[in-house]
Length: 78
Image 1 (cartoon, helix red, strand yellow):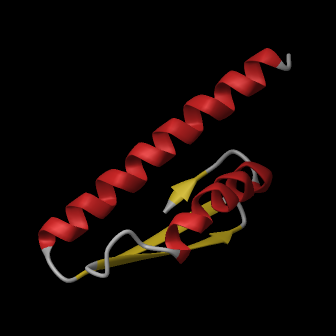
Image 2 (cartoon, rainbow, N blue to C red):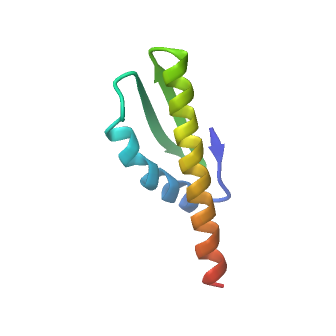
Image 3 (cartoon, rainbow, N blue to C red):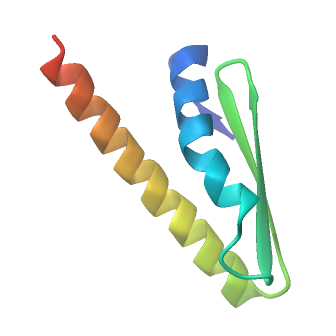
């Protein structure tokens, strides 16, 4: 579960990550994502720990990238 400062920001991240959940890179793992208010909930399933670790690392990297891009855009618009 990831808590965002607003429902709007959680929705932005949900929409950005959703395509990744709809076409997984490997059949060894899958991720479900949903929004509950300002919370973004990711549910990971994997056939083995290696696949789970790879999936977690990918999503953490994408989240970090999205946060950096979003912060940069917000700074430039102010």
